[in-house]
Image 1 (cartoon, protein in one colour):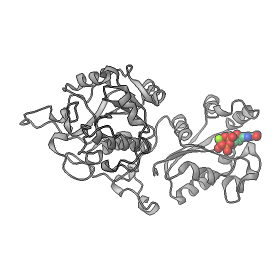
Image 2: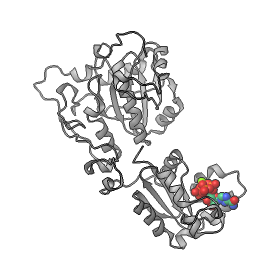
Image 3: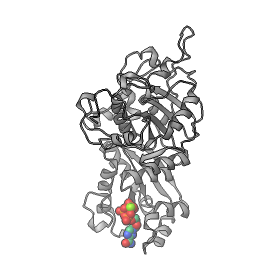
Length: 389
Ligand code: RTP
Ligand code: MG
């Protein structure tokens, strides 16, 4: 259950006129939601038409646009558990007559064409509406009340991210422990700052349109390498799926290191399976996943990184200009929670400086250790006991 689900709420011109902004803010705030955006705004007709595009064929559409364009609206983004559903409940049904007393529409209006407020109807539409109405981005700040609102709230230090508490800092992982030398990403790691190579040779196993759309629109991306043959790596896939839910604005993409398409595809048939020996209650892979024919994409990353291999567990954060901002290697015994990836993603999406581990110490002899683990030849991943997945 996400504590960072967001909904877009808009107080319509009649609601603004009648002073309902304060009432609506108070309801969300006292319930425990966090405000991530709030502004009075006079929208263009074009923006309103985009917002209400799904109603374009309705008879009332021209009237709706004209009325919404007749004065300023108040735009808000509220964040918290079940924000979309709870927001709709607070606003009431579309028709005021069907709205229960105690809801905004139930208490303060009569006519459907003047129903005072708008609320997103799904998590996906909320994200699209937030992007439309707040192209400048949202406010980022730590919610000091989180532990009073949620039983499982993140510790205050990480509340701004809305996710699990992270103790990550220079040389220290999210679990508060020193990161083993070979897994530290030093600031002079070759791939950092490089431009992501073309992904046009990928053969998507699922959700390809989503990934292609994100690449063409220059969305922030997380790319991770995985392999059916790499058994210890399955937990990474689950973890990445969970991070993807936490950061819906970031596009996740998993690229297979398997030599055969059939092998890669087979892992995806295991969604929902329990894998107790890997500590997986229910296997998840709910992000775009691609087979990499002839490992062409892999080769491009390998050349960029100047390493001998890029294998399962190799993860990157890539910004909207295709620049690789962060890279970390996980393995069958070094998990995402042990490293800095999650905290770096939080920092990146909230506009904070990333943790810097400094340059690789000069007396290090083998400069490629950190990049080599998890490579094709990495035995720890070997699927040695038959084809039970
Ligand atoms: P909203 O999007 O504004 O939260 O409202 P909603 O989901 O409850 O309802 P939706 O079907 O999306 O309608 C959007 C807005 O169009 C106006 N409407 N007029 N005259 C009519 O029959 C009619 N039906 C809808 C309302 O202003 C409604 O909020
Ligand atoms: Mg609607």
